[in-house]
Length: 304
Length: 144
Image (tube, rainbow over the protein chains, first blue to last red):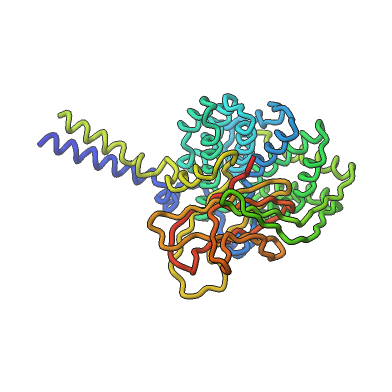
């Protein structure tokens, strides 16, 4: 009899705790800080379809790291946002932005197989994600284990990026799109910082063009942030920063020529080679202005 | 008493299992099949009902692709999916760059590689062949 009573009591406790930890339940109640929830009337309304048409470039640091490896650029700790102290960050704005910045650093570390160094960043990411109530999307124990075991780098990269993709999806579905926009902005600015800093030391046409072509992606980032620019001073400042960077890109010309794609079948797969070409016209002065403005913005964002 | 403890322990861990800390096995399996030298970038889980007619592919996502990068699209159908997943890629001018299905020959490809020479925002569209109902995953990966 006592055993049955104990069992029922434990089941009741477990039921309660499971309900309290459910993200859906949290969202339905009032557990998010006020700043997490922006009434639609305050945001410049974009249609859902328009927002869905804006790209969310979470994987860009992985692509940039891939270019750096092709250039034989050695890894450097100096590019990382090491000054971020996650335990001192108190606002959702900073948490989301820095979650993106550290996500980009994690991608860079993983691509260079510096997985041992990733442990500290993973700990910071965990704190930031927990602070935003999205920690459930990171399997930190597995990520840490994979970081310490270099033999499974593909799984590490997959789990890291998949976690960020899930957070992005979750935040948008739960009406917290402004945090998703901040996270994407953080990822992008850190990737842009990495590319421009490397370019200062290792001039390379491929990387230079990549930086020039970011004019296209920056426009998407600005559109993503646009609905929230008047929400608070920190959003306004970020939007102003992005507009300042956009101004540096104003005279950079990205042109295209069109061509018919070439298709071949190889080993059972369809291989399509795009024959369109894009060209970047960017002077040294324009590039220098983009590099210094990127550096200024990124360093302001990582200061606690 | 031992049985009781075991039961309590299993019940205590039940929420951990139910909240789904691990990834979707279907997605993981598809990622595993993307082949060597590929780096996962994004996955799309597509679940659609049967449509009698449709003017275009019904599932759309936007993705930035970069010049000088080689991407691989891997399409994985659920075992009990009635339809076969097909995709097409459309550039920012609205031009179709590739399709995984040739309606003239009826041939479909579950793996499509794309050598990108123009950075931009692309639309990735998915549907099931003949607008059947189905469940599938599409994975975008970067080829090293």
